[in-house]
Amino acid sequence: MASTEKNQDLIQTAKAFENVPWCEQYERMISGMLYDPVDPALLEGRHRARRIVAKYNNYFPDDSTPASLTADRENMLKGLVGKLGPGSFIDPPFHVDYGCNISLGDRFYANFNLVILDCSLVTIGDRVMFGPFVSIFAATHETEVQSRRDNIEYAREVTIGNDCWIGGHVTILPGVHIGKGCTIGAGSIVTKDIPPWSVAIGSPAKVVKKVTPVEDVKK
Image (cartoon, rainbow, N blue to C red):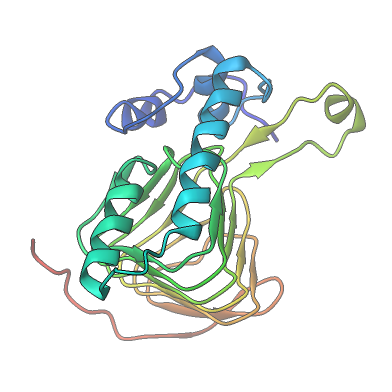
């Protein structure tokens, strides 16, 4: 169900991000309220993201080295995502809606074919690893038909804690919060929150075991 008021905490968080298409509909969008996705500012935001992603996905100079390619891709990601931790790397291709609503922690790694529909904030912690074909859907629609006829939609924030391993072909649905130290088995569909230090598998994903907690890494 869509929210009926703005989430000032999420709006405040987004103010620290880069390349945000600020407007009334943007604030409604990240807050989980019904909003108009064809607002001109939002259209421009998605267009900008697709331009950067197209370059990123097809960038491979003949004279590149592993170090130069990594550095060039990191610079492109800095111009796309809201926040980028050091040592993060995404193997192309990947796709996003806005990019600016994504916060990536230190040493994030994603294998091929990552999709993030970041219509609300998507926050990913430190040392998180994704297998290939992971999808994060913060965007959603009402099941009642009229709002879809009216081209109105909403979104829900997604968070993934530190030290998580998300297996290949995992789908994470709107509003899900995955605690730190979790493993999500390949092919799972995560529909509800997963508590920290858990292994979850299946469709829908369910916790099948707990793992030994470790101390947080001091920065």
